[in-house]
Length: 235
Ligand SMILES: NC(=O)c1ccc[n+]([C@@H]2O[C@H](COP(=O)([O-])OP(=O)(O)OC[C@H]3O[C@@H](n4cnc5c(N)ncnc54)[C@H](OP(=O)(O)O)[C@@H]3O)[C@@H](O)[C@H]2O)c1
Image 1 (cartoon, rainbow, N blue to C red):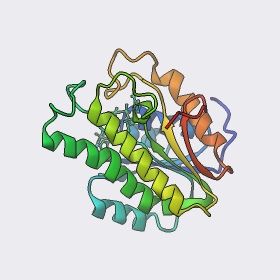
Image 2 (image 1 turned 180 degrees about the horizontal axis):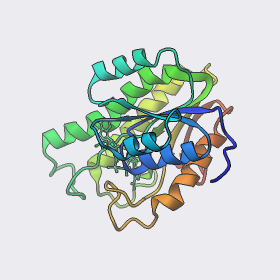
Image 3 (image 1 turned 135 degrees about the vertical axis):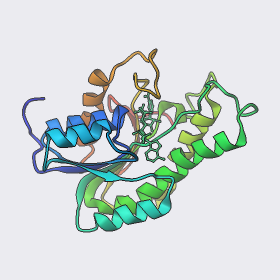
């Protein structure tokens, strides 16, 4: 996009070093948004984007597996209010399709802690930084759908995203009087390190759609589980 129709808007994207989170950061920046993205290490693609867009894109450090780091980031950004807070970070179960009977306990814990517990800790603490009528979004997956699971496979990844969906549902129930949009996004199978080379869609096609769907949620309160065309995913 060459124009900047949303200039003045701002987003905090957790997990923006590479892949979908980085591509979303670039897309929001292209649309004129101010972007704060988080990374875990130096020299990421987000650092490159921030260097090309000084004053518009900035980098913070956060590992969502570390609750003290989430609290510290919330404190550092306490004076900011974002139109959108989006938690993108996630990990896959390496060696897919591992079944629940095959997976090692430490691998199960790692996936669940990052995809469900860490993501929701970030929502609980950093969601406060979203404007009262803003959007709090989390990167879920179509694989988190119970209704659509007809084939199995990637058992623990699926379970971690289903847990994320359920935890977000609890969050929404506790904030039923709130005016924020609460979005679980299922972006589709996309070529990234996590998605792998066989995914049918590239980021250049998928990310503008993802961003369109998120922007369209501004001003409409409540919980929704949406794909990148804006359709509801069966829970
Ligand atoms: N690609 C797909 O087909 C697809 C489909 C459905 C859903 N998703 C979801 O989309 C999200 C992004 O996936 P992707 O395909 O872009 O994967 P990716 O290329 O592997 O990127 C994963 C991102 O998550 C970050 N991350 C992982 N663990 C973290 C932690 N403990 N704390 C903070 N950040 C952490 C990574 O940071 P580092 O660089 O520091 O590791 C990286 O920025 C994930 O939640 C994934 O489950 C992806």
